[in-house]
Structures are given as structure tokens and as C-alpha cells.
Length: 95
Image (cartoon, rainbow, N blue to C red; front, top):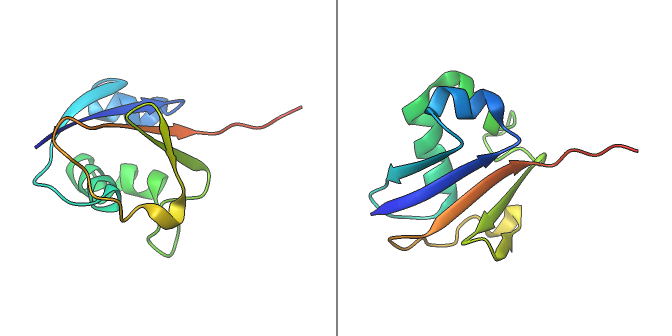
């Protein structure tokens, strides 16, 4: 299946992946499996950026599915469908 993945506020990952938005060929599965597949395809550096020491998506990242559903970190077992769009973004705080 094809999943469009968008990287917002993630210039290091965008540079490695070849753009802010990519179409990723994914055999199917969950959001977590997609993120793992992205890390595997683009290498250890991307994996270290995305995952914490326990192998979970780092809490500094937020996930948006199809530009309308915010997915919490405890719901990354959600199944994806062909044509879905996934946005990974770094939330930046400040004052």
C-alpha cells in the first residue's frame, strides 16, 4: 500500500528522506510499524531521532492521520489503509 508521509519541523529527516513529503510503499500494518519501517529504510540516524531509549516514538513527536485525527502515543497500534496520509511533526514550545 502507499502511504503519504509528511515531515513537519523535521529538517534532518526531510533531508535524509529526500523531501518534506514522501510516498512510502508499506506492506500494511499499524502506525507504529510504519514509523519503524521509515527508520529502517532511512537508517540509524533517523531511528535515533524518532525513537526514545525504550524503542517507542519519542514524546516530542506528534502524529496526525489524514490531516484530521491526532493520534496519541498509546494509539499507534491503529491500522493504516492504502492512501492514508501520516504527518510526523516536532512540537516546539517556547515563550
